[in-house]
Length: 277
Image (cartoon, rainbow, N blue to C red; front, side):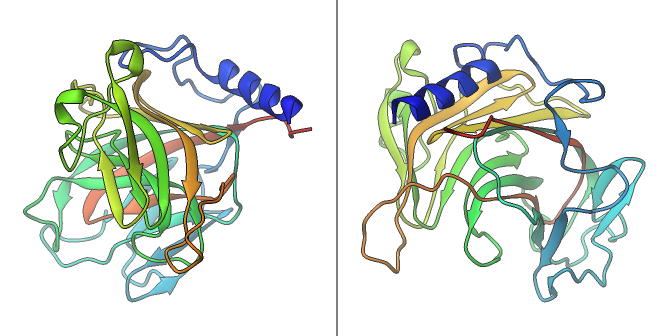
């Protein structure tokens, strides 16, 4: 057990400097070209290693061409007319991953669609997906929504311990604040869908934005454009149809959410930890 703890701890230390919410990290994302340890999850040419899941169409069926790959990007809804009714879903990895550092870049397009035409542009990065495919699956999510990029969402049985601004602790969506800056302990999730807003501040840019998640030994860290904006530890899952006992989930599928807003993704890369002893 001690060897396993040390291995996980070393992995986290190589991924990030000690997290001080909102401050830049020393190893902000770069291209993985000639960079040891990083592996592309998206090859820039096609969806090898991924599958699609869309409302009405199910797995690996996209008759409306919601998803296109061009110029090294995954492009969503590029062919859909503005304000038209569209299907939603995600693009998921065929493999499961645990103990890793994932990074990607996204940028918004100009179009929005029904049923979310009147709402903010929205998408997301799912991770630790377990169980059958579904729109809003059993998973954690790095929220990608205009003005809310980096919110931490737990879905359908996942729970995690975190820290929030004490002024927001009683709110339905409390705001992350690291303990070294006065954050108080708060458990997120356990049933249904729960939200924890990212560290206060506007870090989203026009054009391309860099998203990162680090998952190691039950801890998760969200970063946006090189800044730590959400964290948690002690990740567990309680099956709402089971015996009510929480258990540890160490790996799961990763997915890019498709949610009625034009968006492009590129440079989807992963760095995994060494195998645990």
